[in-house]
Length: 314
Image 1 (cartoon, rainbow, N blue to C red):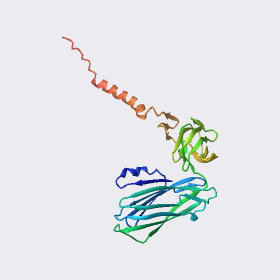
Image 2 (spheres, one colour; image 1 turned 90 degrees about the vertical axis):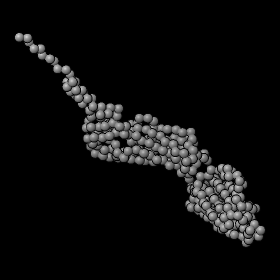
Image 3 (tube, rainbow, N blue to C red; image 1 turned 45 degrees about the vertical axis):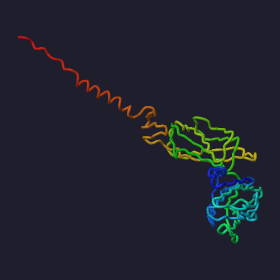
């Protein structure tokens, strides 16, 4: 449990609030009481989360006996510590913050649940006379997931042709947890070679931090007459945050098709019929050299001095 007081004149203390990824719920209540609750939108079974509560009195009247009561029966398998937050009073401009720990037990039911909070306060009218308690219900949506989510994104051309190279990019994101001993493997179909490695290893991939690899596909030299699909399998093996070994996979297909008369390759090369122009030799160079030579020859002929013929003396 973490608590932090924020005095009205110490604005910089707002930075003491931990950086918690998730959703933020804002409530503007009676008497200028502003509440901001940051909570995880998803929690995996057997893991923990944090709810951050920040309340500020933007009214000119004092508030007393401020409390947040969590209804634990609404979410079976959820443990909240502490199960209530109480603030004795907040004067004009006063703020208070506290972190509440969430723990999802292994027998919790996956799905969307709502954690209900009963909020109450007493407004001191004119800073002299306490009024009747004010109550307000707050519902926090939380999705309980059975397993952590590791996502594989694969980027490659929609179609390829023979006797050329094409890039393939793989990105792995672990949305919920840090993963270790990560191995990313690309399994190509037969007759497809790679320039570069098909197996990549990482000691650790942090939560919500994408990691990408890039390789190049080398297609067969023999031309094809019809188009057909080639499957590529991407396998990601890793160890999760509780020491279990896991594996996720994805299969993507690309169309191998006949090459047309003119094709642009991804590295800037050009196929014109059976003739290939490398990316480091520009088309302008090929055309420009002979054209420049002809123009230069014409200019030289035009500007060269004419020979004078001598007149014979009679």
